[in-house]
Length: 575
Image 1 (cartoon, rainbow, N blue to C red):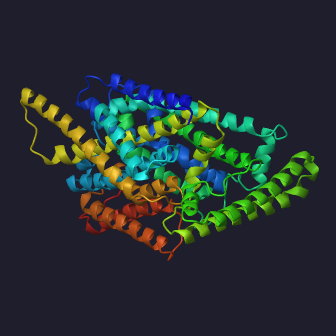
Image 2: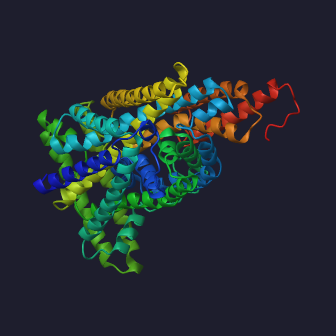
Image 3: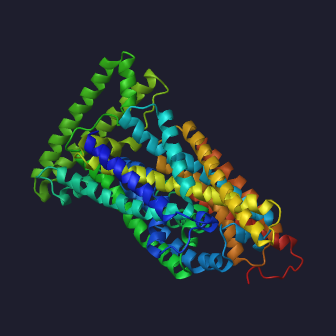
């Protein structure tokens, strides 16, 4: 990288961290665990920043490059979920003045239900925190040519130090500016990609070409549960996932519990609900435009070049060159077909579309052949490369200065998301386990102040411990097909059960812990069993449906158990 890029990257990150630490100076326990008096804009941007990790800005463009715009359907249930949360979830949290969402469950059910739900959150979010450290480590390892494991350690330790020093208030205040920089950087990247297209290709032409190549299929109405992304899976599985994530996941709940008022928190959530789908659409469109850029420029045969470098070091450079030459020839023929398509009038463009599709298919076959060859050379070579696509484009084709800014965007997203997760993990551990299971609080004010100081220290300790666990998970991670899918799969394994517990709590007032607790345990075991069968190809089911299954089993079984054990058989289930 150029010196200017280093200055932009370093300066942006340092200023953001210093701002967060400055804003959170002299904070108390309440500020560390929950945050205090935050405006709707800070809440809204902080919620988005916690969800929009580096994985979003690495993987989502790569997802669109490979599969097109269909992934946006995943988010169609989100606005509906936000309305439900604002109407039902949020008022209860504010009325009870809880630190975590799971505190409410003890009063509604019992301690074991609270601890079970908190534990499910800790497992799911603890695993996800490791992945959010792993993603930015890929960036630095590629840029610096560093060992990936060493890079994970460096990134993880920096994020842990930043989170321990700040707490919730620092995280939220910092996330507001991080999200602003992130959005500005992505808009700038989009503009530069369009600017780099040939003069003969208008923006409309680029969208039309993307449509020809199957990248603009936004809505899929197929009633196929094996298909991961359809409008139906988005409106059902996506709705359940969003309800659980934004309504019961402490990393999100913690963001809006620190609002100045119920009204401020509601506006912040609604802002996120209105803005999130267009933002994801735009990020996917950036990936599609990168794909179009590589229709008129030669892309790498594989974007994760580490495998090619290793093959060359092992003496297979000749075979690598043959594959690369074949791929370049196909790409050049495709470019000629695209040029003819661009020069033709609208009525005659279809004549060249078959050639474009033919060469696109041939290029994809050659990419697969190269990947198979690399796997034969060394089975440890990682050939899944969709997470490297946008990063490769940035490093190879962006102007000096913009490279540093976009890397700052991705690393800012990593820091904000991981910091939010670690902070929520620590808060849940302290509030729902440490404070709840230790000795009762003293009524003496002086002793209470000492206890609060001790709890603040313990909170920072647990933040550090969760950070170290996340680093260990990151060190164990393997590059899968797409990191953003992995994070959503991890969430879907647990969120359905958690959501079912909260829906019973909110809407089925007669059902008590005796019926709910076994229903929740059975539901979680059911989801895990379904996932194992899915992985083993015994069944085929889109992972978004895990949320529906988990939630449905909790509610259905809890109702059945309640009806079985209730002493008043004619009792209504709902009030």
